[in-house]
Image 1 (cartoon, helix red, strand yellow):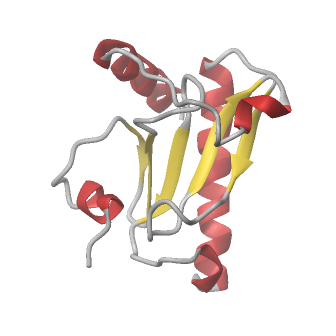
Image 2 (image 1 turned 30 degrees about the horizontal axis):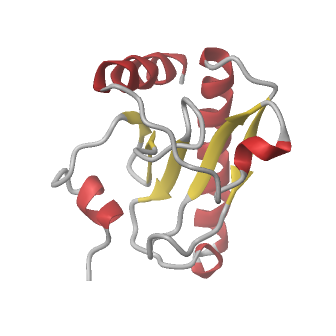
Length: 130
């Protein structure tokens, strides 16, 4: 069964793309905790991040690091927080969340909503910084 991420990879569902290569894709979360909250995913469907081959796992984190560096250049924040929860969508993914304090990466907080144009501008700025 295809997850929503598989549909995004195939282009069946649009996304605010930040970076992409033949193995990985990064895009803005549509239910973010903060402006610029990104998801980094492998294109190969794998439910659990620790089921990935070790070389793919390492490259995923290298790709995520490049996305985080680009986010930090664009979004005013103290850090880019990292979370791997793995329960919401059955497809391995890393959350990269711009934060100023630990409370900013609390997933039980209400999610934010941004206008389409603001999401597009943030995505374009991060993509350019990548």
